[in-house]
Image (tube, rainbow, N blue to C red; front, side):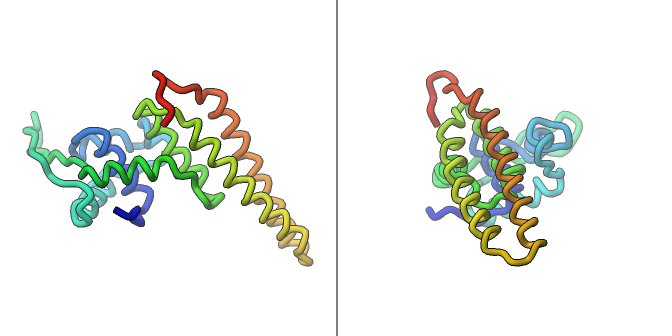
Length: 183
């Protein structure tokens, strides 16, 4: 299965369903503002349900049963297909390639790896390599630019690379392999 082109909200929902079969309300409690995932990347309840619908349509998750709600409607339980589970594992291991994705996508990947009790060490190492490439490209563009605004813009983006490196340093300091897992 080739890696699908999904928006971040759908990747998050898919990763959570791949952990264990679940229903939309349970997922939305993890992605709500201030919740475990939602603290860093908020996915509204309607977006969770839209993501579930899209993931079902793409054949990445399937309905596997229903749970009776105590005070509400019956909740449909969804599970990831085996192929989708493998795809999520691959996605979680891949560094982000765009600097502006570090804050959202990389942070979510790290949180989802933590939930799986998987060390982020390999992802952090690979992300550093990508940041090296981004920084080299930005430095070359800054040096080649003859416009002061363009030079300032490239310098500004290099500051973002520095911030991302400091973030990875902090993550890497705590990236000792939990329970012997290396991810």
